[in-house]
Image 1 (tube, one colour):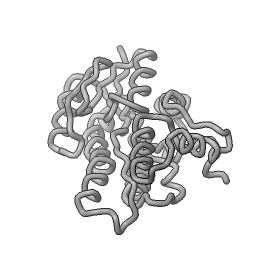
Image 2: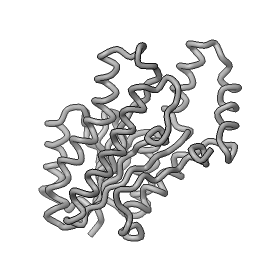
Image 3: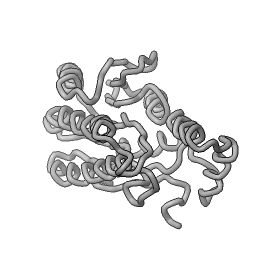
Image 4: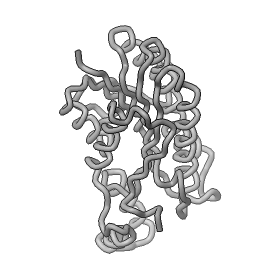
Length: 241
């Protein structure tokens, strides 16, 4: 019988790479996203709608043992606190944090009944450090790191592990969108900005989504069965500086 992985935001970027890798390793993958995808079992879902998330996961739970949850859905937003409107704040926290809250809460009854489960939250290097013009995004990613730790402690008794993956600068559509927005506002040249971003990394390059997916797969596996409550940094050495 195939193992089951539920992922939020699995239609693009890091999420898509995770879906592809888990399918390659013979998982049955359910992708909860607003953007349709032909890979895995696609479930149209707005992660800010708790009832919608709960309903979909409950239906999956009735038919399957849920082995893995990857809470990956998220958006980037660049602004300091003064430039962040209430609507901006609610949107970032709604997708990045509320979505994770809804998914974790929904999978726990199934995992508890099976006395097993791996929960992986997609946090960021910004759970460890601050970056300029990143008030709401940084806050949301720090919250996910906290959720991984508290969930790990509360559910260790049920053999459920929870960890956060903390990527640095990864070359995804989200990255390119953020660079495009910056260049549009500042008039900077995208090629130069991209080179500058690469030079900021000790390994002198950006990370790739496939590399993050490999870390997620490891954390979901029995090879990581003594790892819980951890923040797993994958940032090319950026936060070590």
